[in-house]
Amino acid sequence: LKQKNLKVDDFYAAREDTIPSLQWTNIAPPFTIAPALIESCPSRIFLPNDRAMEPQQAEIYTRFGLNKRQIEIIASSTPKQDYYFQSRAGNRLFDLGLGEIALAFCGAGSESEHAGIDTVLETHGVDQFASEWLRAKSLNWAADLMESEYGLASDDVLPWKTKTVKTKESEDICAAE
Image 1 (cartoon, helix red, strand yellow):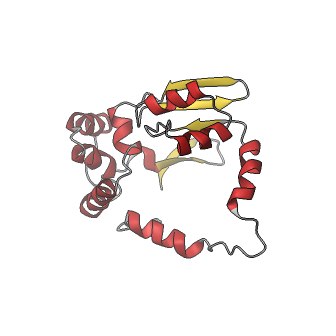
Image 2: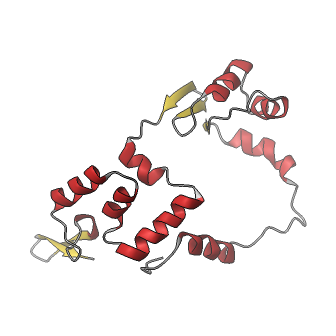
């Protein structure tokens, strides 16, 4: 995965080649395994689902131990913002609270955004990806701040691409990867 021109789709293709498909012979079907999985996961995070109140969906949530009010909370939650946490200690709706910069990176999940990531990587390379992706997401101010904070030029060693090396004299030396 260290190739410069690696595309997001290449990762998924490589994953498909390396993870064997399950053969269902001598394995219980998934619906018989589900109770054991549910029981073995004492903490769960539910994503917003505007269809959670529909009978078939509500039945699934009920199997996870949620009551009608909790299912209503999931149904009325804001996508990509609210999450419902369930544990033995209690339940709570929480907002992940990602700002626009974090969302530019963490929220890039659509096919068009993956294509955009590929384009930025092909055009600017790995070293300039962060600032150029911010520009592609119309966050020029953040890209400018990042470049001015680190004083980056295209051939500079990036601060996050360095590591500390211990010498015999116990001095820390910062070396490029």
